[in-house]
Length: 137
Image (cartoon, rainbow, N blue to C red; front, top):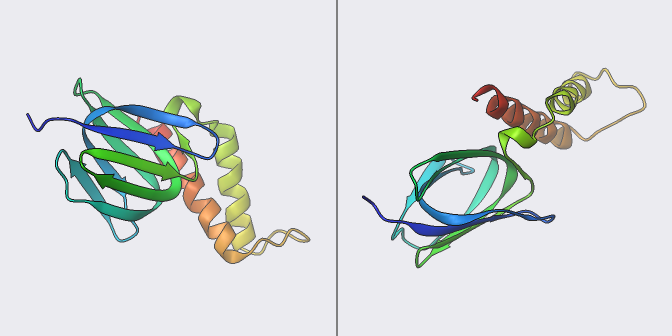
């Protein structure tokens, strides 16, 4: 048994998760990475993706984040996420509409509704992450 450490996930709106965990896997800017008890101190930028947690009871917990920052030191980890949703919190219709709107924006199909390319790409990535999490159930 690897042992546990404290993990807290916070968005600007709420505390999403707070518990002792065995491990967490995160979507880093360069690649996914994992953290276990006694990990070396680390601060990392995160991109939109799926966070996978194994809690103290060895249950798998997954949630979609819209990017953010992660810090761990002395067996205390904090994820500051732009947004975070568990699968049951995701509105599938809204995620599909966001994906469609972002795709149409990138394809130049939206007249009078100019969205910066970077914003449209980020929105598309977030929508795809949310849909991927819902489809993993």
